Amino acid sequence: MTLKALALINFRNYAYQKLEFYPGCHVFYGDNAQGKTNLLESIYLSARGHSFKARRDREMIRFGERSLYVLTRIENASRSREIETKISMVEKKRVRINRVDIGSSREVNELFDVVLFAPEHLELVQGSPGERRRFMDDLLNATQTRYHATLSIYEKVLYQRNQLVKRKPKWMMAQLDALDQQLAHAMIEIVHQRRKLLERLETDANAIHQELSRHEERLRFTYKTEIGEDMDYNLQVLRQSRERDLRERYTHVGPQRDDFLITINDTPARLFASQGQSRSITLSCKLAELFERKRVSGKAPLLLLDDAFSELDDTRAAKLLEVIRPFQSVITTNQAGFLRQHAPEAHFYHVVDGHAREERGVE
Image 1 (cartoon, rainbow, N blue to C red):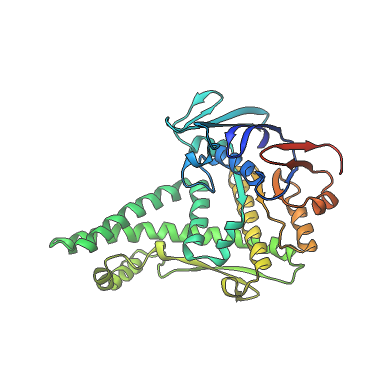
Image 2: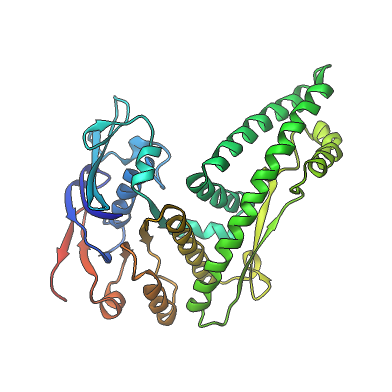
């Protein structure tokens, strides 16, 4: 899959912008607050159906305007498609593929896949267990249809169980037994798929991280759970936790509480990794995600890197360029000097006050 073109109207600080894209690397550079990340956000919106920054769609509409429009043209197996997204202050969001309205963003996701690194993704290493669970679940939901269905069932039953232990009706015990049976069954699939995913991701992420660290740092993932892959064991764990659940009025065990431990050279990264190491680890995880998505779909996603090269020394930055060179990528940076030197084949765009201009020569 290849991104061929992007057009924006009233998106963030862009009144109007039209860009062509090519195979390989695209570098958008300029000072802060000029609109570099906004370009990545518009591409992400087109592919995923939502922003990675805005809490509400209308926040992306240019100040003083009533609607925004994003068009991307992608090519897959020599077939071209146009994806249009319109967000209005007064109308329902509209998404079209080749001028035909679609009802679900999943239709776009299957055509246009992206992997994003943004500075806030450092929370994957430094943040709470919820960040790491979200990373696993988002990737499995995108690549494993069965997982998506199982997790949806689990979350629905978990909600019912939590409501039950809060209210404590007289008929509760029989109902709790029935809900625990459903939870224990769903847990097996969720834990199994997460473990298998982490095994695959660890292989790729460790290989990438060793390249970035000059083979000085070994990266490992360890899944942390009280749940097993046996029905009777899971029922036992739920029953042992029941008294506490009733006392504190929510479910204390299950995949919704799990985590995975990231270590470098057997040291917990969340506690001891430097800012530069955290960035390298996160990048390695994101590139492992890219490889996993390509492995499942057979198509390479578009790679979006927002300020990925800051806090990396020149050696790590050069190694990162080597890893991403086979993929189509869109990169933002404040300074383009290093990338001009080490990726002269890239396409460079100078971003100033909501306008990106492609540059043909070296400044």
